[in-house]
Image (spheres, helix red, strand yellow):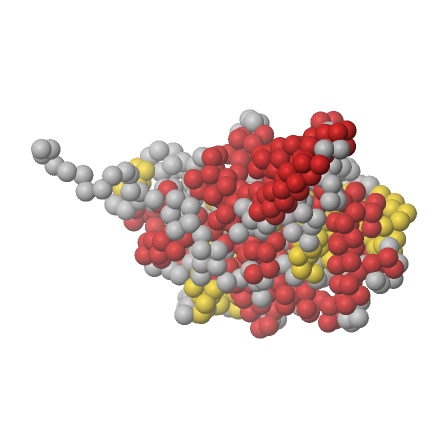
Length: 297
Length: 331
């Protein structure tokens, strides 16, 4: 008889739990392998104080970072169904349940309205920790409604992308979310309102091939992976070896697909500056003083 | 109906073809010998062939439909264009980088009067696959590069300027996943097409004629009507890639095909496809003329309906249609 017994077989850590900031007071930075104090990291907006590596941040984290203070959440009651009754090694409904328990959210995106530097703005943000930030019907609907809120109320719109792409478990319905969100963006464009995209690590697949690449201004966080077909897909299907830095924010900026690369610690003031420029109501009144671009290090 | 023997047999069709061959042999013998007692065994065999054919083709699994959609003899975009139109002028290039042979398109006269409406000039375009090793490579297996999508939208915008309706034919295993495609902005090219197609002020009819894989298909697939051939497939990912990601193995493509609900009848029930176009038994390649007839009639009737709408109503309906797609509840 064994001295101790394993209660269940196999490793239980979900694959989606990798690449996330582990609990505990000390965190090892994937950028520089140094150990960073969690409190310090949080103070730095989840950016490594030693090497500027941008850890993943949640949608709530971005709302807290960007809005002037209070903001109103919308559509928190949207709930995914299982239209395909999809099962792979695991049932989709079980995956959803696990993701909800893990994140405390209903799905992989949240939408809010608030002000930035006094400018009303409609923002939606994705969460990689919820099934890889994948876009199914709920994420598509949240993003689409957030865009609609913009053109119906005359506000600029921003979306913060963090996604592996369209969600396989909802099949073609996920694919159609690309068309849905893009269709709503035509209305925003007609209304003459700006659309900002903040591309964070990673943004790939159907999300990149729809609203993430339809911004008036594309802002990327440093070092983010931004792609249609990710490096693993290209390597496996084409057998191509890829150059270093391929598909990073910096690479996309050089290629002409990203306007600005902005450190998260100065993101809020940079976006407010853009809003000041584009949404001027009274040109004599400046809303915020723009601090010189200096990174706390 | 006598089946012409095909060089390309799908595995699940083999028993049927073996039986058909046997029947053929017996018929030859009868012709030579005029044997009376053969007649009854021939008619029995005929019945067996007919039963087997029905049982195979009326109970196709989703994976078997994927195989039919990929059949090397299946009619491709240029075959449809040749059958449905006259005077096709293929136009080339995106005016930015180059021409992509994986997407073909141009103006042509749609032979509407043959299908119950009227002849009219249309912009018709689609993914194009090759038939042999050389042309497959040339067409990149129907996997477009960014310049393909940019050519497509250039042609569609031109059509809109001249008030010509647009017909797009979807048949791709996906957008090309290569380094250069990424460098030239594959995602941006597809995204821009989704945006522009959502507001083009002319009717757009989308027909899935073969494979509809993911954003690579949707990149020319936003329109007012979505028609789909009976054995075509359309989903967010191919069964093989879905298997590789979710099962972490290439061996679960049949399970993945089942799970993805990617057939035409599936997409009708998901509210994505408007109309399924029937195929001859065994697939579109068994009788291409019957296939083209069905496609032509479906395009003609939908075009007639759409051309009754004002531009404003057309665009509102298009956006509302996509807006309604999705399955969720408000708890």
